[in-house]
Length: 79
Image (cartoon, rainbow, N blue to C red; front, side, top):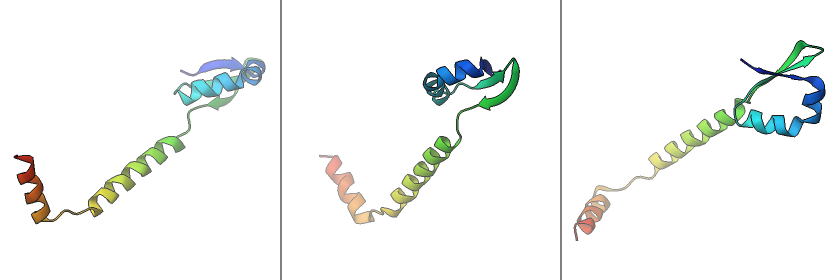
């Protein structure tokens, strides 16, 4: 359930509310007791993190190591 906050409090405490939304909380803004808007965390941040993770995975696949290099590294590790 979303925490309700009056429009006046939302206006005066906006920076605090935004920090809390960034941390994952959600709010319903009311005007004279009637809900008028919901403030919820943006899904854009999640999508950007997922996109970056995919790009990192694809970039790591491009870095191929030859069998010879792998054998050398394996033998070096046994010393």
